[in-house]
Image (spheres, helix red, strand yellow):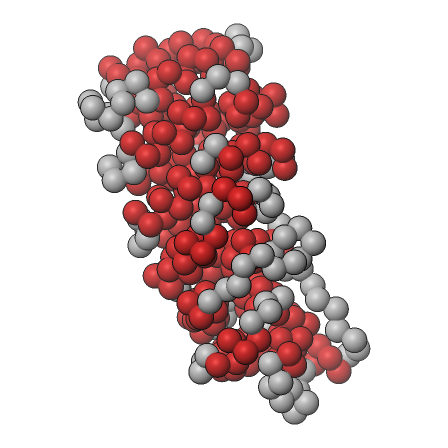
Amino acid sequence: SISVMTPTSVTICEPEVPIKEYENYQESSAPDITTLRSIVNDCINAGNDAGAIDVITPSIIQDNGLSISFDVPLFCLTALWILARRSDDNKKKIIFEGSTLDSIIEVMLIYRELSVDIQKRACGLLWALSMKPNDRVHVVQSGGCIAILKAMVQYINDESLQTIALGALKVLSSSSKIKYEIDMRKALSIVSSVMQRNAYNATVQCKGCVVMSNLVTTDDNQFVVAVSEKEISAIVNGILANPEAHDVHETACFVASSSANVDLIRNISTSRVALELAFEKSPEKVNNILILLRRLNFDVDDIDSPAIEGR
């Protein structure tokens, strides 16, 4: 028998802070961040991280979008990201105390059409805040996923935004609570659209596949919503667009092999070509691909696989 392997792309990891950007703010002489930066640095240097968070929070959205300044929210989001990485206590303060989390999500909405950089920084921060299951539940319930999805729609062709947004959504979608907080069909449609628009970006394809898998299944692998032809087509096209990307092949076939929509996959004209390409290019990932080919009733008996001959 052939066992189903979980691809390494399903693994959750914490994102690195964009230190270079933060160093730029430290050197900036812009008057709107000089005083704020000085107070925040004094708090951090004194070991008072909680005080730094309290200083940053009201500054995130102080302009309320009326006096447009990208420097202040970018500095605030980056500083919070650094503080979140410093300790779990800082994460919990940002998430559960005061209005910091609400302000992070609000600034995403205020600047959604104005700054892709603010969206990227906020997505990275939400990702960093969501590493623990209980924490990510609160981020989901506070509207974090909705804000991320809106950013993805707004900047659908920006690969760097999509990479970090899908990274955040990959973590958040692993919480079963997401099923009750967002429109699942709309979320699946957005993710598949992003995958189609950025078909040649292997990272987008891998993360998009994992997010879709998380959205359609519960913790015990029960299906809560069916994928449509649009989602399956995005998975198939991702394989064809990345013929040498073994991680894409493995993740796509992992998601498709757990799908209940076998007939739908079979009816997509390019699905067999894509799956056989994945089989040919990624023989070391053969398990999930063979399972899927057999579920689809495709003839695999004549496929020569070194990975199987050695079993």
